[in-house]
Image (cartoon, rainbow over all chains, first blue to last red; front, side, top):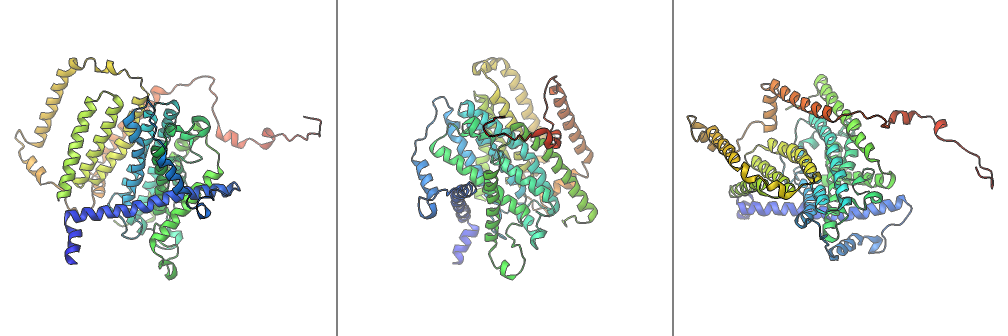
Length: 344
Length: 204
């Protein structure tokens, strides 16, 4: 037994096996969550529009995501003859992969994290800025007007809103004094009003709206606005490549909700720091918080109309950027002069 | 350590190969994509020597922002691939000379040749050092104290470049109708909506 423990903790092969197992332990539940997020999305929109939503396949339509996945798997992968074959196939892979690798640093509970690195926030920010490549390469490689226009819109939109997300992250790390995500959560311990959503409420709102823009969701779904661009950068995709884009989009939504709960909703903390609530495992609280933010994602999609493109750019550059920049300065000043600078 | 060594050789090989492909590949879009791959693997090398902050900043700034704009511009251009190849041999000698000069400068800087022999030995010992503080904090401490003025000057230089770019592209065209959000919001209901009582079968 001691030999076995020694093998997994010290031998390089054992360490590699452990890392692989940890990755699977995160990825498989994530993929299941993505599948059921599509189901939840459709059910929520259906309820908003007084419909029933998927209810035929399996009890309450619960097997619908599996049926959809199977259908996409069995379709033919069509590569347009004038498309750039290699990049056309690589693009959805990039989109899907970037949505998965970010999960390496997300803490699910105290110590439940694959890589507890010092620069967790920066890592997430870096990975989320890579998501744009899948889109832009897809748009170019498809060799189609609609796809290219959609990709250009999407790239401009993601780059714009990343700026304000960056400033939101800076305010949070000013309050924490560390870039480590576990420390970010630990800095919010206490009742639910001591989580950062209340003291940094404007930043939470900006973060959420920017997250909608980052994931190309309504009201910012211009890159694939059906009425003008067919399906934007996904126009030429079918079968599994399309499915990878689709899964990547939902995995990204879940990721940004997880980031939102870590930064503003106290991660794995229970809202009331006393016995009956703290007995519930942290990972369940974390999942509940993610589910709440995802519900708001679907709610917005079911409720709001689409932005016009110039309005979207105006919101990003002329409203969010100055407000978040000002809030960074304000937070720094309040921490410095109020004597609340986190102990290093 | 075997995993680290293996990772180092993989990343180093990919950096070299993709850097070569940036120059060699025929399609400029491929060049930019190989450049991105090179940046990415360079960041991975930074992680391996324990400079995680610089690695992340490299990805955020170069891969996340600069290279996206590169790609944007290159994709929008209507590029004649054969025209790009012309003159390759003409510029080859001067390119080689610049390359050789840069190579010797690196050797000088590392102390392989010249009087400063000790640097390479010091570099050989460098590895992930166990610092009492993480390197984000270490960089912050020197950047905002010792190098404060240089840091500010760098910021001003970037600001000048930005203002220059804006001045070059800003032009006021007559007859452009701008959207004024505040005016739209302050527009009273009486200006915007008229309620008409339409008699049945009468029409408006």
